[in-house]
Length: 222
Image (tube, rainbow, N blue to C red; front, side):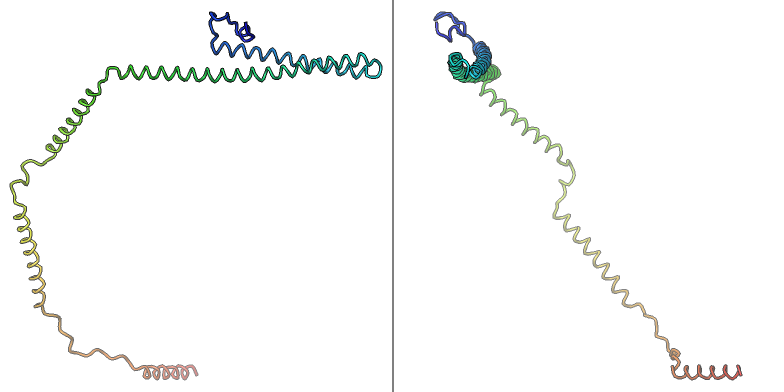
């Protein structure tokens, strides 16, 4: 059995394939497990580095062994980094595939619902129904036009005769106004007065009288 078969719990060729949700959950659990392994390896690398520094001058053999273990831990850490990248890529691909599956499923439901809604509809019957509606609208419009048309008023009169009578009435009014204007021409105007109006006093005479009054007042004051 393959590694992914063990991971997803498959039972060989006859086993039931996991659902996308189950596979995604398994991949997330694997990511968490590898992340914990990373933390453990990083901690061990730090410890071996401390041991190598501590024994660098006192015990070179112990220092070299610590550096070798550090290198192995670093190799494992690099492998885990690559594995995590692969698992993350696969998980994202599964999530996208699961999303597309749900979208297509919902679109299929919508298509079935639309088909069911149109199942009892016949295009010929729809055309006939729309034709009936159009015909009834035309009938309703004709009825409205007939109802709104005046009945028994104005149909028995000739419009030309009415216009001619109106012209005669306007001419009579115009002639009457002209006669009234001509009658005002015979009214006598008031006569002009025959006596002349009193003339305005001469300015020089008024000044002489004022001087005389001033001399008189001065004499009376003495």
